[in-house]
Amino acid sequence: MLIYVNQFNLIGDNATNRAFNTIAGWLKEKTGKIFSIEQLKSSDEFKLERSTVRTYAATQFEPYMHSVMLTHPDDQVSGRQWVTEIGVKECQTFTQISILLETSDISTQVVEIPTTTRPKLVTYLSKNVELDRDTIGKQLKNYSNTTDSFISLSSEIEREDRSHPIIIISNGTNRKPLINPLKLQEQLFGLAQVVSTTEEIDSWEMERVLTRRYSAWGGAINIIYPSQGRGFCYNRLLLSSTIEEWKANHININSQILSIITHTTNGFRKKQHFSPTDVRAKRQKDQRVFLKNKFDELQDDQGFKQLAEDAFSQLDEHDAIIDRLKSDFNEELTKWISELSDEQNKTETLTAENRAKQHQIETLKYQLSQSANKGSQSETFFSPTEITDILVDGLTPKTSLLLISKLFPNRVLILDDAYHSTTKSLSFKNSSKLLSLLSRLVTEYLDLVLSEGDAKARSLFGAAYSASESETVERTDKYASQRTFNYEGAEAPMFRHLKIGNSRNPDETIRVYFHIDTKKKIIVIGYCGPHLDVVST
Image 1 (tube, helix red, strand yellow):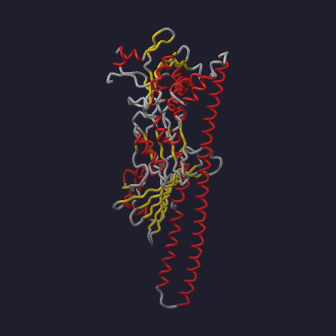
Image 2 (cartoon, rainbow, N blue to C red; image 1 turned 90 degrees about the vertical axis):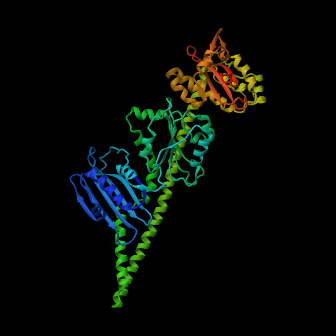
Image 3 (cartoon, helix red, strand yellow; image 1 turned 180 degrees about the horizontal axis):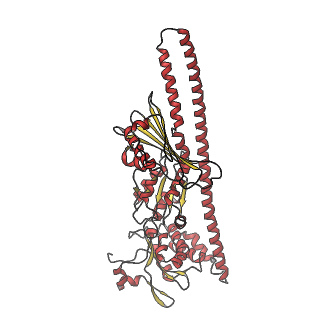
């Protein structure tokens, strides 16, 4: 089973010897034997106590090629061997290293699936040699809570010549990611670029710029594959619940994500790998070229020379046929790998869409059951006047409140003060976002806050939610009174609020102040209008 395959380009002075020194150090750790550079550049076999090292070389003509293969048994699974192939190619301006890791099982009785891992040699290379500047994932990248940062990330995602996955890591409820982004980037070095943040992100602005397909929030991790000329990118979203489930089952998350990445990269990288078989084939070809050159230098015995040339001509023709067949096979393989990747991504996309539709169905069922339990459906349906208002006015803060109150009558209560406050926000331009926030407030947020508390529920909104106001605002009568509303005959302070925008312009900014009635299990909205006064006003 193919576990891992990748290539790295080494630059700088003495790159080849540095590569072999690094390989020698890695082999010493794996086998306990010290290998010299000369031994690794030779064609030899070294049988050790529990492992075997074989070396291959093709150095008669450029590019010089070498291969080192280590085989050793699995420490825990009987009947399984691990095989590591390391190819080294000396080019004019750089040295390329190709690393392949696979398992070889003695029979189908070996059923345990091997854990996806990255050879430790990759870590040594990242520390000991100078790598090409285009090496993927040399360092962790960050994004910030600004529109410019989202636009920059969007440009990188949609770049047509991008050939590697991008992994966006979002922060969880404690404003920290569920995994260590730096450790994940080290695991995916050379394969994918990890992007994380240390800031609280406005998920709505992120979604507006990146679209929902390419966004991540609430601790989720979004893997975005290259477009490969399709005009869009497939993605795989790992929700926080999935990651938490992996943790609970003691599954190594970094290895799991590495497995997801290599599932799509191994096919293409395997084609670029040069194995011991490739090095042996080049050595034989180099030998034929060498002999042919020698025959070309002969001056006498023309008949013998002609016979040799005919033989070499046939061998060259045979090689040409093999090369053509190999090229045709690689083209066909590339096509099938691409089609397989497309089908896998389509399946994942359809699965995700199916889950989303199933959730919508369950939500509708719940709403219907809630309406039925009410005994009377009159409150659930819109009156002719209400329908007329919605059609004439379109989606406004007032109609958004009206829609939410009718769709979720047992989950929200809109106070008259809230409807009245919307008259000051008639020019607000982002009512679709407001309606989306309100919908999430009375469904996902309400369920989560009642079951697990506000600390976790607030992550659903990111920067669009505040659990309180400043201490000065809450203790100053002038400001606190603006956020206090009559509910069931008593004054109810409401400092929790949703927010869109930060300016004083009512066209762009709105605030929704609400109270959670834990006994009735409903959201009570007391205000939906422009930014209220604060100390700096």
